[in-house]
Image (cartoon, rainbow, N blue to C red; front, side, top):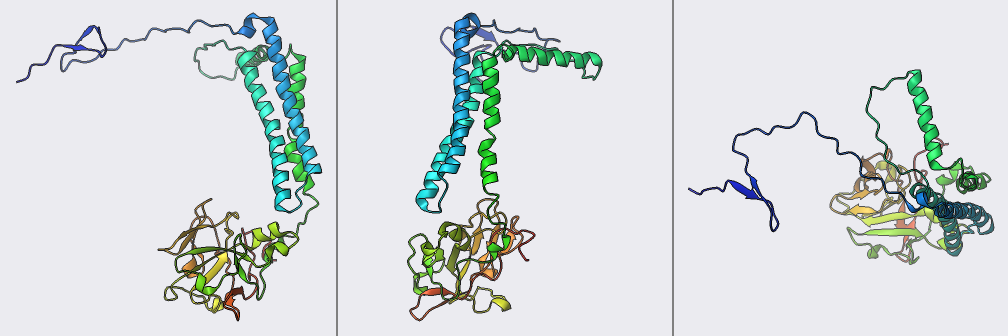
Length: 352
């Protein structure tokens, strides 16, 4: 029988022995724990030196100034460098707007952090818990707390910071309002989604190379990202591509289910469907060959492309539109027509 030591030692050299608690004994806790209190407060440099406080105020005002410049720069970039539909134009416009938006938001955020770290009161305040009531005394106490908070923030005594804060906050909404107002003059024709660049005889080509696809190139179980032939000849080809992108695959014809009104829309097991999810328009790009399911990564809507791309899971409420396809005299895959229904998310006007 092994004898257990009646003393235990805590880890570390020179640790003092601690008596082991007898087996079966109960641990007794004190009725109340002693309040350890707060650690001694350490004043910051700005609390002790008025010059340091003024320097901090100037730096905070400078950050608010950066935010104001960013907001103004956003408006200038939106007007002076609009997207012209080309890849270069979209890239440059996005870059300029992104930099300006970053400066507008970063300036406000960084200034707020610095204000809190250097000028606002950082003293710990202990308040005893008490039942919440809506008496006049409580409301008066709450107002006094708000007044004390305003005093601690030093906003009343620093007019420059007050003006910089209000100016930055006043200009920041322009980064959202200007693009919204600028798009008011655009088209409101929601039925534009009923039509894409696909038409009878349009060849299916690889995205993004634009190389035409022969039926023999499509391997069973693979997934092919497809765009219309001569897409870049369109004036607004980026917008047109967003509507016309297609996913194509080859399925064993024995398991492929074709509705009577879609007879002949596939070719030797090759089927093509819109790549745009019918929930909120995300790209449906995840394919599970064993189940023939297409998955939308945004909200997990799942479509069975072996059965008309019907919804089998998720929030989408209608199947992916199918593109009728066939082959031309040279063996290249071509569209029989445009989609027969609007692509993209469902909306109340789409069937008008």
